[in-house]
Image (cartoon, rainbow, N blue to C red; front, side, top):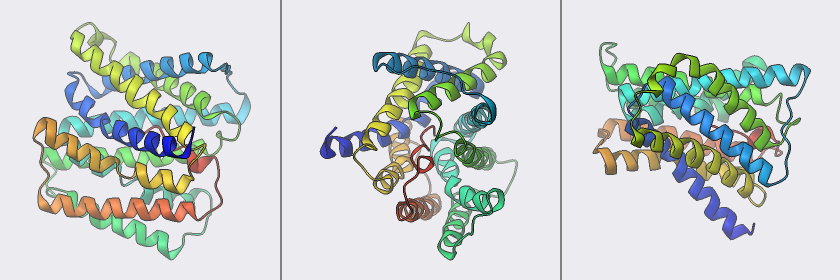
Length: 296
């Protein structure tokens, strides 16, 4: 892949990630069903891709296997809570609340890995916190939008934990294999909670779930990994940070969901924090872990 093709690929991946909430809104099913269907189609798509490219899928042993199992559980929690946020609070609130995950990563790295938190990273946490206050429609827990934001923040927290769990596995498996195994685990964990729902799905819902799993998850994953063969992690992170912008634009275009000015300001603070976080990580030596935050 040439550099120009890599830049196009990363922007297409960001657009596809931004469509995730749109499909969550379109599918007439529970967050459990959407998560299970997405994970099943994504794991199947990644498995077929690996067979096509000559890669074998093997389940690791020991500590690595346990961390992959933990990561799969956290990914399931992340997706279920994100789609709950979409259903309850709307696409904009769900996406912006989830975008709080860089702040959680900063806090959890210091807590779990005893890594020193720099002043610039505390500034990122502060920006995200201010942004979430702006995004919050009210502080009334009877307000559905507020409940949706809490689900979205839970989605950001679980994604941060998922990212940190992956740090223990990414050096032992290729990116496609790791994502395939984790998506398969998500499907296994969530299918029992929604099996009866699949019988009532419309044909159109099946199509949306297919698009969500294959196009917005497996295909976007392949694009992102391919682009990282030519782009620096910092450059990729800055482009992927545009995901909330695309999601809000799509929500306005397809569902006439227009966030109020206060939420837009809060969102701008959160996106600024994401960009600053990506830039800060780009100044560190590149690691596999920095390049695998791709299941959002």
